[in-house]
Length: 260
DNA sequence: AATCAGCTCAACCGCCAGAGC
DNA sequence: AGCTCTGGCGGTTGAGCTGAT
Image (cartoon, rainbow, N blue to C red):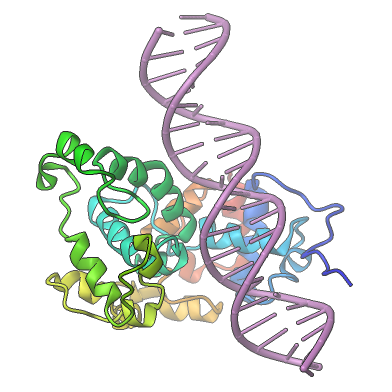
């Protein structure tokens, strides 16, 4: 017996989301919180696959999302994390508040990958592509704007500890696939990296905006929603004035949306 | 102004793991 | 134990945008 498709393919809309669809989804999630995604499109009156709704929410509509390009610090962190975790974008994204796995994946593929290659660094292994490329293109790593702070050989050693296999043909084979190991704070000199890589970072709510926790918990959402990016997200829909959300009922929300 | 090439990123697809029955 | 369902993940695609010619 074959597996059922995640949704009825007939009558399911694809492609870019409209402002109206976004509004419906937001309204629904505000009222009911995140529940069974499969049921969301039906209940919210959307002709979309539940999966598509989840994706739209997590990658675009979620209030705690940052917008815009990754800054240098974030970019550096992504590189460091990628060296440890490989293409596990969701794990990497978990360490960058307000960023999605999709966003990081895209940024990696469009920006970082090219930068690394240009620098003579293999974006997969994080090792020099070849000695000549490095010496010709990046005679001094510290000169490039990314300002690598991590010795990749050191990183590899960190990640290899306990599982070393010197006969491995490719560097990645031994690389940190056991994240419980690799993500624990280690002997890195950089305390910031250590902190961000630690589990406690994710539990630390100090970067959140506590003002609206009660409001959002009421809707079953995470407490980090009160963020200017949320307004940006709504500005995308034409809802620039969203600061009054605390006291706004859904009719008012509809009115605001109607201005779009 | 028109065309083309390259780039960006939202969205889709297929697969997998875990939970529940 | 085995099956189904659901959520989540990573890879890929393609429409739209931008800059170069």
